Image (cartoon, rainbow, N blue to C red; front, side, top):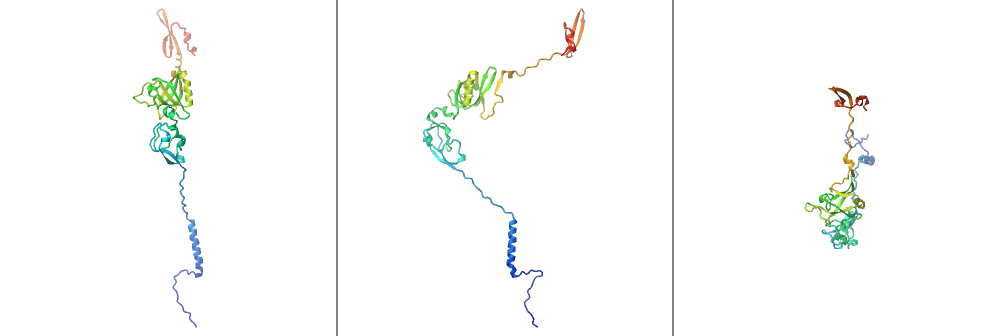
Length: 295
C-alpha cells in the first residue's frame, strides 16, 4: 500500500485561506468599499476669490498748488489714473477745451481739477461773479446795524432772511450765503465787524424773486445761523395777535346766596351774602339778589 507523503503546513486555528483564483475579485471588492467610504465623507469646496477690476481713467492733476487767476494752459499737471467710479463729479478730464480759461478758486496739488473752479478771465478778475455757481444769482440789499446783526453777518456767513411787516414777521429765505459786505470779501472778525450799509447775497432764483418782492413791503432783516445747523424753522411766520396770547376770560358774576336788612337808628342798611362774604347792598331791591333769580 502506497503511503502519500508531504510537508504539512502550519495553519492557525480559524485562519481563512483564500484560493488564488479569488484574489483579483477580492481586490475589486475592497477598492469599491474604499471608494464608497470616501464618497460618503463631506468634502470642502474651495471657492476661487475674484478681485473686481475697474476701468482706469487718467485725468490731469496739478503738480503744485495753483493760485487764482492763472490760465489753465499754464498749469503744470501730471496724469493720474483713477477707478472710473472714484472720479469726483465735475472733474476735468482734458485741459485742451479749457486752455483759455482761468482759475477762479485756489487749486490744491495732486487732486482733480473741478470744472466749477474754472471760468473766463473776466470772471477771475471779478471775485464775486467767480463765486456764483451755475443756476445761482447774486443780489445786493441795503442793511443797517439791526438787520445785519451788528455787522456779524459778514462774508461767508449763513443767514435766514426775514420780512418785518406791520404786525407780522415772515421767513422768506433760508440758508443764504453772504458773498460780500460793503464791497469786501474779507470774512468778518473782531477787527472789521463794523456796521455795513449793503450786503451781497448768493441766492437761488426763487430766493432772488422772493427777496426782491419783499423789499418794498417792509423791512428786511437777517437771522445769523451756524454753518452746522441744517434745521428749518418750526414756524415761518408770527403775528401781533400771537404776542397777546389768549384773552383772559371775564370774571364770573358773584353768586348771591342771602340778603339781610339792619336798622341803624332811623336808617336801614342792606347787605347781601356774596360767595360767602357780606357786602353792602344799600338801595338795591332784594329781588335782584334772590337765589332763584341767579343764572
